[in-house]
Amino acid sequence: MKKELHEANRLSWNAATVAHNSHKGDQAAFFRNGGSTLFPEEAGLLGDVKGLAVLHLQCNAGQDSLSIARLGADVTGVDISDEAIAFATQLSAQSDIPARFERSDVYDYFRDAQARGERFDIVFCSYGTLCWLSDLTAWARGVSQLLKPGGRFMFIDFHPYAMVFDESWRFHYDYFNDAPVPEDGVGDYVAQSGDGLVRDGYETGVQNFANPHPSFEFMWGVGQVTSALAQAGLTLERLDEYPYANGWKPFEGMRNIGGKRMAPPENMPRIPLMYSLAARKP
Image (cartoon, rainbow, N blue to C red; front, side, top):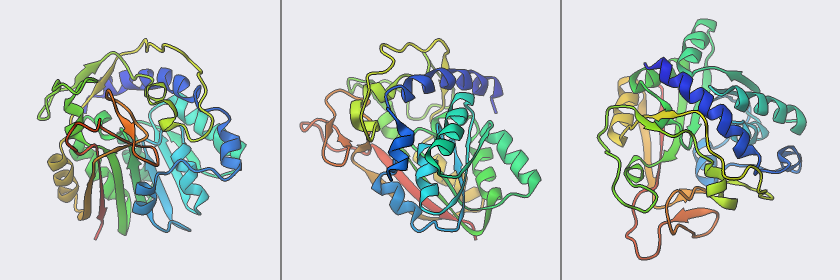
């Protein structure tokens, strides 16, 4: 584990989270009026969660956590960013949707929750999460340890194959990279995606955001992810790939093909831009 890089990422996310939420308008009103930030893919993965204990890892500012809680789940959200957890806690109170949020490095949370004897029916994470993990084996082991017998792990993220491209669809990054990738900092991908990642009333908010804190990402291929989960004792039940990215427009010429599903330009062959999986603890 590279805890010093995690700390750099915490600072970078603290700065970026302020910019991201500046574009999202009155989110408490959105939730009070019955809004949800879940896309059909993750809603389908989760299924009926009423009465279930759900752990949402790397929950960011809590919007998806509260969307799951609204479905009747007992939700615990965990994120490394102080700013994100503070926002999530406030949003829960203002929207009258109960959920518990804890600021922690995910690896520290695994250790502490294990010591407290916490167990969950579902562990869930989504969209831009694995690239912040420096130790995939320890992560998969932590997920497995916190699941009840018969519990499920559900995951959806942007496809690592898509991450080999730069913004102009040119090959740039190595798929089989085992070293941290230094970046200028977490960017304002919400502004970059326009209304793709904002469900109601996109606002200009912070403009020309430049993150003062560098960040470090990690590349994990699909084979590495599925192997780590299997080696941690989970049984893979489903693996799906999608030729679009929900809400996110990281590349030039991406177009909305309906439901805020962003696809490459029409003249490009279809490639996997997202994948999801479901696994169960025996």
